[in-house]
Length: 347
Image (tube, rainbow, N blue to C red; front, side, top):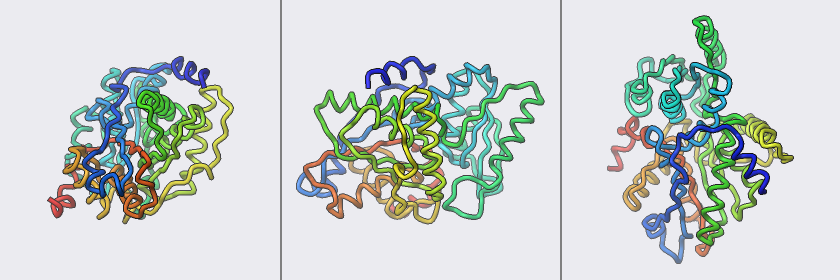
């Protein structure tokens, strides 16, 4: 839709990412999975190479979110996530690029988590960090009192004369989802230039903002592929409702009449494992296989579980070897350093 393209370009946005990100072929992975006779062509959309603070998909969302914060005159950014949150790390960096302060409310299952991986980088960026205990269900990423603690932090900042701008967990809002409407347009343009018509796009789905943007983008730019979201945490019914709301908000910002219902936003729940942020055997295999065969780093929380789903589908022969499929690499490599023990048995 040409009008959608024009509207996206008119929405305020700051430059944080190196775009477009590459679309490359996973030659080694295809060979490891049986070659041309058994495995489809696999293309990697390298959003791990967005450039900001070691890269990742959140840079796309943050370009719009930070611009919105600046428009509203914010002096500090507040956001939430797990202690090894990629989103928190990239938000801290984005805030610094924009000359803003940043406060992170992070959930943890350890009273004094080691400063490694993303958590180390949060401190390097000078973020003010508030730790809160994670909830009892490891499949649920959000702490029970997370929203209340964020409200307390916001009140404290306002009392000090600051003007906080709250970014939801994962950058998942209507504004943030615009990043992947834009990303869909970018991907469709790359595929057109390559004369490639993929059948599927696999991606990891957590807070559902990326999913909302991809689904809305698919309605606007009519790609050939179907989206295959792989859940990394539980709470599916609530998250589908949230994703539909986010997509509706993004459509409203673009001024387009598109309806996306919760039932349109189903994800595969079979690869979560024991819980959010807990590596799985299939995910660990995916990490080592892709690293050894293509020199690409996946992470234990998100991309490894999505890649495990792709590998399982190839091995189950549910994808024709003549097809082309895409794996959206959303980043997260810094979290590898926080999971050395889990990885050690495979090295």
